[in-house]
Structure formats: structure tokens, C-alpha cells
Length: 420
Image (cartoon, rainbow, N blue to C red):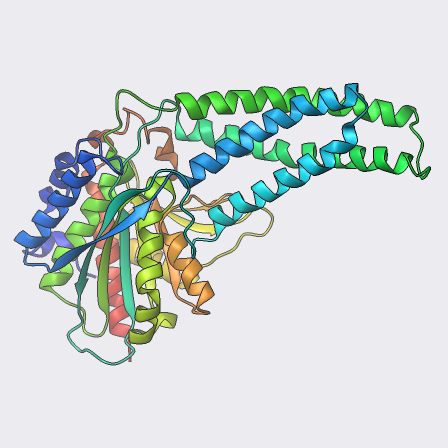
């Protein structure tokens, strides 16, 4: 194992200097975004690393769709009580069906990152791409893709508060639809003498009305969160994700001066990640087929670095009932490397996987039926700071940033040595 601090090509203090140099609002579509792009390219150019930018279009599709669902649910809960009063609750069948269609569209946008759906005002952002070719350019060689988003986001409410609140909101949606559908169908069947309007029916109406009050309350609050969710103090986005930007810059410098023998390394600084993984999604849409033709993606990896702050975290397994391990080999290699270097690394399992750029690569690999593994460095407990004014450079511990570079550099070197 190589301690990168022993290499003359690695300047340890520079990694935190990158974080400090990005101490400004970098929200997608703003002047700060262009300023951060210029900074990354300036450093790469100074280090004689060839790089380019690619422009793509994006919009606040997910935010708009979530607002539509919330408004529709609020309206439905109020309308349901009105329809019950006039004994017209069978009309909820059509309203619920419309709501189901909207939810399906939203879920498709959330989980299908192989397509683009632009709703609302279209904006432009850029990806920054740099590739370090292997010394031996064998056909169908493996590829390592390092990714990190450079945009930031500012909000009034903490990431954890919004996450748990909208989780409750999502949990309320399906019982509400189910209960009102059952009641509406029951009401229709009574007209054909299949069922009667008995005491249980009226008790059920009363319970669903009570439930609709709860739904109305949560959804009203959620709409207010969406409307007022802007932080005038502006997050500096240090942990999320100046840390990842800095680590990629230093890795690019290391590999540019000491290329791998048989593996190409591609670096991708993604734009507009905070608004729906737009940068990584559109990079994959444009390049994945070409990468599949040139490289052996079955033996390739995407290592996404989203947050390295007060510690080094690495997502291990995800899932609600059954934990899925999409990245066993690469996670094991990274963990073994960290242990050999005696660098603390915390693996953790999550019920709901954080939406970060590695998801785009996994989706496209699955669609292409490739076993390309993905993983994500993320200091999960630091989410209490992100998107707020508390996300400051002092929480990006220099030893952790350097440690992440150390782990990634040595892990990839070890993979390269195993290629036959």
C-alpha cells in the first residue's frame, strides 16, 4: 500500500484549499455554478489534465410533480368530505384514478433515470469531464468512473426534517386512496343491490373523514415547506459537495502523473444533481452506449463521492425488507484497502437509498444488462448540516478528505494489478 502523503505529486494541504476556494453559493443555474466550473477547469488545466465541458438542459421536474401531488391530495381530502355530504362519494373513483396516474408518473421520474422528463422552465448546466487513459490501451479494457456533483442547494428546513416529513406524507397517500376507493366502489354497488348501506358503511365513512383531516393537515404543512423552503443565508455546500469535488481533483492529479497500467480512469463533475441527478443522467444518456462499445463494463466501476465531512462513510446495502448489495466487490476492496491503510471507514446500510449520481450509472448498467458495480461515499450523519448555513469548511476534516483519496487511489491500483 502507498501512503499518498509520501508521494511528491500529492500536496496534502491543497485538498482543503479546494474546499475553501468553493466557499460560495453554487446552486445550478446561477453565476456561482459558472464560477465553480471555472475553478475546477482552471486547476485541471494548470495540472495539464485535458478536460472538457458538456452542456445539458434541466428543469425542476421532481419539485413540480411533488407540488402537484400535494395540491391534488389536499383538494381530494376536502372534496371527499363534500361528496360524502351530498352522497356523491362514488365520484372519488375518478379522482383517485387521476391521482394514481400522477403518482405513477412521479415514481417513474424518481426511479427511472434512463429517461428525461422536462417539466417547467428549462435551464442549462454543464458537466466537466476528464479522462486519464491507461498505459496499455487494450481493447475492451475496464473503466473506472469517479463522479461528484459540484452544485449546492440552500433550504430553510434541514434535510432530515424534510426527508422524514415527506416519508410520512408518502405513507398517508396509499391508505387514503385505498379507503376512498373501497368506499366509492361500495357506494356504486349499492345501486345494484349487491351491498347495503349498513352501520359499518357509515362508520367507515366517519373514519375515512377523520383520516382525511390528518391527510389535509400533513399535506398543508408540506405545501408550506415547499413554498417557504429557501434559505436566505445560503449554504456554502462544503460537505455537500465541495468535499467530493476536491477529492476528485486530487485523484485526477495523482492518476494523471501516475496512470494505471490497464484501466482508464474517467472523472465526472456533475451539474444539477440537487434537482434530480440531471448531470449524471444526461452524461449516461449521451455516452453509455459508446462506453459499452469501447470498454468491458462488466468489470468496470463507478465510485461516486457525495459527502466526506466529519468522517468517511460508505453505503453498503439498501432496502426496506430485503437489503440489496449492488456493489459487494468494490465495497469489499475499498474496505480492505482502508483496513490495510488503517484509515477509519464506516460502512452503513440504509432503508431508503440517498439519491446521488451513482444511481444513474446503476440504472443504465441494468438496462444494458451489465454487471458494472457502483458505490457511494457519503457521511450519512452529516446530513443534519447539509443545505443549511451550518455546512461549513471546518466540518470537512482534512484527514478525512486525504484518507478518502488514499483509499480510492490504492483500491484502484490494486484492481489494476489484478487485471490479467
